[in-house]
Image (cartoon, rainbow, N blue to C red; front, side, top):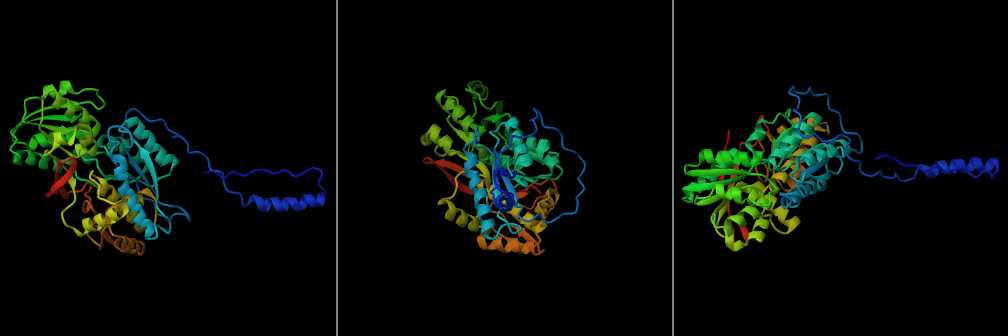
Amino acid sequence: MHNGMGWVSGRKRLLLGLLISMVAVLAFACSDDDPTPTPTAEPTAEPTAEPTAAATEEPTAAPTEAPAAGEQLKIAFLADFSGPLAEFGPVIQTGVELAIAQINAAGGVNGQDVVMVVGDTGLDETKALEEARRLVEVEGVHAIVGPLASGITAAVTTAVTADAQIPTISPSATSPAITAVDDNGFLFRSTISDAAQGVILADLAADEGIESVGVLFENSAYGQGLADVFETNYGGTVTSSSFENGQATYLAELQSVSGGDYLVAIGYPTEAQVFVREALENGIYDKFLFVDGTKSQDLIDSIGGEFLNGFKGTAPSAGPGSDALGAWEAAYTAANGELPSLPFVREAYDATIAIGLAAAKSGSLDGLALRDALVEVASPAGDVVIPSDDSIAAGLATVAGGGDVNYEGAATTLDWNGAGDVTTGFVGIWTFEDGEIVEIESIAFDLG
């Protein structure tokens, strides 16, 4: 922001003595003027069609300095509020909002309230890079929760946030390819890799007695990665085909994978609404397996619950009965009335709390300091912090005083490995039932 100040001229006909008096008065008055805010600027850099590779050398950490008086921790929520994932952005944002509300109720970070700034990727790489640059260069955010999609997360990291040294935690980028992104250690995820979900999906198909499947997957890092892991671990017959986002029809792709017992639908809600309906209307498939991207109330509303009843799917899940999950569910219900049915809300909450704890521990808003502190606040050593008001307040006080904490998240433990991955957690089995999404069970995994 730039301060605006109006210039005031005296009247030429005033006597010299009065002129001198008025100059003094005007000087005092101008000092109390409110600054005039400038409109939000457009990004100063043009987005590139292809992301550039991040530097491979590890940046040298500079001595950290305490944030200037009045400086606030700014956390961006870079998600999807338009495009194929538009259903998810507003719901996942409620997790970020709850975390920030709890942090600020405990006194904030470094004596200041935490501020959230929102960006929309629209599941479009060019738009995502524009928004990432705006958030970093114009809004001056210190960390990012998001993006949601794996391909967008990789592009934003390599083209923008790794070089800018902005810690980025995706709550939902599940592709195994994320592990290998060249990120200088600035990319984390608070969800599991599909290296786990694909195995559980294959086990589910076997448990259901399904001997053959057609797999329709979006041509993206997410779709390809999950389809590959599923096919590698599934013992039955697989016929698969990719599809491009935004098509008006997927009939040709459906016909190319016809003949299986079930269709495995790996994509996003707007796409699934088209190809599931086409599968039913053309008699190609009437039985389905779903995944996290198609765990969607919009899909139910579009297709009709009666056509989806009893069909199951997988998605990242929280462990059953943990103190952390119980605390989060109580806090979320108190704030929002009911628990969310869509995935990745807990993961976004966990990412936000971790950033707040890291900023308080480092005493700095410097990106390198935040990156290193993120690993520390989620490590097994230290006082356990769970998603309750009292525990978060105690955790912030502990790290601000130089102590150690171990944040046990609502979704996972966040014990990140060297690649920023969560290596243990749970995959949930869920089903469509009477127009609703119903959880069945959670299955533990360990990728370590």
